Length: 121
Image (cartoon, rainbow, N blue to C red; front, side):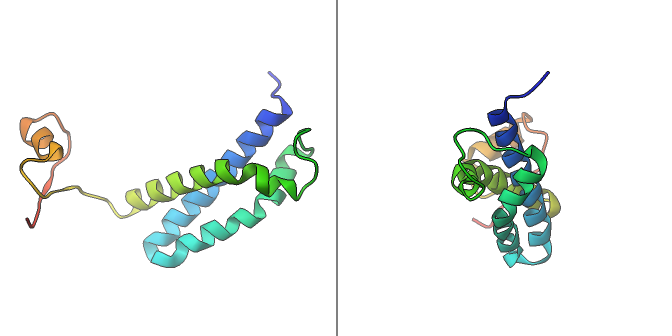
């Protein structure tokens, strides 16, 4: 199965978003401002894409145009995987602030597989 050049380009951008997101999330566990480092890795997108794809799709005229073409795809993957890896790293536990909330009702009825910490309110 051979991928079209456009698809290979997109998948490479998404992969770079995943890699930078995981780096951001795990480093943010140790230092809250470390997510900025992951965002700065966006400026290496062109090098990563060119290392993997080797040639550009027809709608990307030159290497500098990679940034413009890849921004939204990279940003969404980076943001999602930053939040996901950070949440996993901190061992997030939900808090039930109100007995009227949907989360509280799901936990108390036995439909949820999580335990809920009691809230302060």
